[in-house]
Image 1 (cartoon, one colour):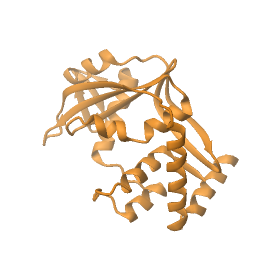
Image 2 (cartoon, one colour):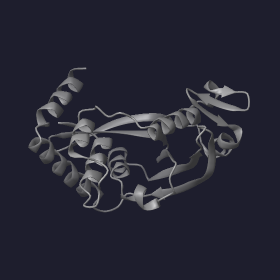
Image 3 (tube, one colour):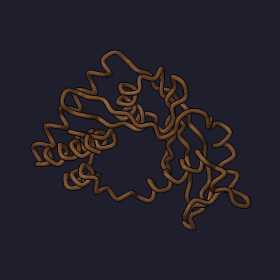
Amino acid sequence: MRISTTTLESFRLFMQPDQEWMSADELAATIQGRFVPTPKVLLGKAFGEVLETPEAFKVSGGYRHGEYTFDDAVMEPALAIFDRRGVFEAKAVKQYGPYTVVAKADQLLGSQLIENKTTLSTFDFDKYAASCQWRFMADIFQPSHITYNVFCLNEDYNGYISLRGIETFNLYPYDGLHADCCALVKEFAEYAEVIGLGDFLRERQRLAEVA
């Protein structure tokens, strides 16, 4: 059974007792890869690609990526803290019993793993710290620590993007991290069987093995 860390994080959020924003049908669609990216997701993807290869998107006074324009007042502070060395979009897998978990890191730089995120909301450290995604990345890539750069953006009704600030923090592996990952994978796999998606995930694994 092949499972991505983004799917596991969606499942973790779905299982929170007070969550009301995701239905069982929406989670099933996410598991099957029928996820429709939101404008916030598309904005974050565009911003991240400009960070990685700014020269590809440079225009007069800023940077243009599709429908998004980031002026120099937004990108200069972001690029100033961004280390463009290392390996980007690094993918790795790890077995958790019979289950294969796939993780993708934004950037690997020596023993450091770096994640670059954007938010249009108020910065909430606890949201990132509670996520299972960094835990699986720590367990799979074995970095000394994971650094998050969170770029806090505003978007007005005309689509103009501004930068409110940049929050940077580190998260570290801990005793029991692997056991936590194993427990979540097992819980997800049992749920996938109950809702009839176990065969779908096993077929995904088979196709990945023959690719």
